Amino acid sequence: MRCKFCGREAYVRLHYPKMFLCREHFIEYFERKVRRTIERYKLLKPEEKVLVVVSGGKDSAVTAHVLKKLGYNIECLHINLGIDDYSEKSERYARAQCEALNVPLHVVRVRELLGAGIGELRTRRPTCSYCGITKRYIFNRFAYENGFDAIATGHNLDDEASFIFSNIMHWNTEYLGKQGPLLPGEGKFVKKVKPLYELTEREVVYYALATGIEYMVEECPHARGATSIEAKEVLNAMEEKRPGTKVNFIKGFLRKRSLFEAELKEAPLGECRVCGMPAQGEKCSFCRVWGLEKPLELKVKG
Image 1 (cartoon, rainbow, N blue to C red):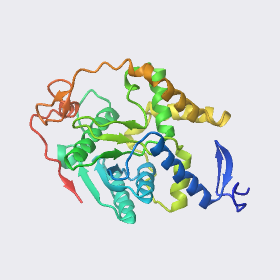
Image 2: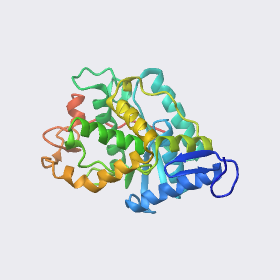
Image 3: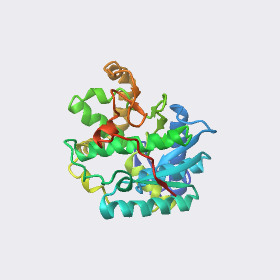
Image 4: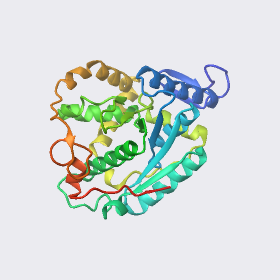
């Protein structure tokens, strides 16, 4: 098959829009789509200082790579979750990715910070639930205390579609009011953006391969059996039969998001009596989950 634009041998076949592209034109297509997403949703301004949260995986590595190439002022943060060999390998990949980009990398190690790794805390919460709380707290607090204007994560179209689909299937609509490519900053909450919002997981993989980005392939051992994975499988089957299902699902959600925003019933935010970060009630969810009674000093390693 031949590239739609230059006639050279095709590198990838896109299902939606349906076309074949060579390596060079696919890279151009991918980066143009990221730029368009940033512009369409007003995610970033050229002068802003951006913290990219990198896990060692493909999505965050590609996010950092494209933002750097587009000229944004980025630094990276890796949160080592303390999950034995998996986390050590993740950190090695994150370091190599940032060295290749020549961007600063900051590392926070959960085990050193809290005395236990993810999966070792005794709590009724599912592991993925308190892991998410922990990561969001750490990267938001780090960004706030170090003067970053925005936090960029590697969520792609498949991630967003599966999250929305899964929560609608279970009618957990209270989670959907703030879902989208941009979560504006407020007070001590730093703005959060998703530059890969309109790109599929498959496209991200092909971009990483086309640009020579090496990334961690293994999934977190605690993610096995997660409902988000099941939702992705269902959506992938639908996409195979009807290309464009995912992107049209997301576009429809964004048009109707106001229906879910109306369900947001949030108590006024105060300050956590332990750490001083935003909280609903006396303590923030992070300090509650980890049973903290005195503030932590974020120990960061370069």
